[in-house]
Image 1 (cartoon, rainbow, N blue to C red):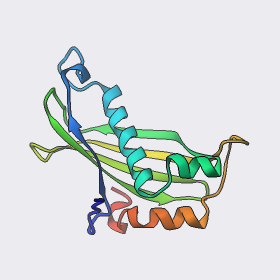
Image 2: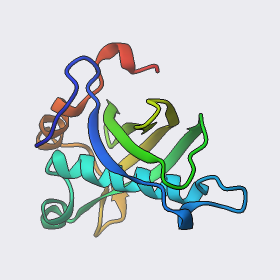
Image 3: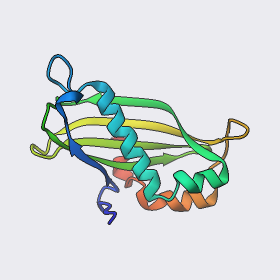
Length: 151
């Protein structure tokens, strides 16, 4: 069951454990695994919207990440339990922005903040295409509440 926080607009999109193999020589989760969790969360959010996999294939469209901004706020170590909450921050003409928050579920501490810009790409022309009304309607329930846009 999809649960979106009515106060913030964030939806839980990932839950897991930091494995020892995810950690670098300093004992911290390596950045490649932070990015992988954000990728998993983004795919899940688009799936909740009905905008991934088969639906996008039918339209010959794909979401292409063109920019990521990650703020590492606290370290994660092996065996830490994490969750990622995600929301859509803005929808432009051909793109949208996602916001992700990675939380250490044992401490409640936010460990990562991520902003990702995705472009709606036509797979045949390899060009950005406008977000149609169906896409705008699908993402509406997953938009951040106004106070969250600048955060």
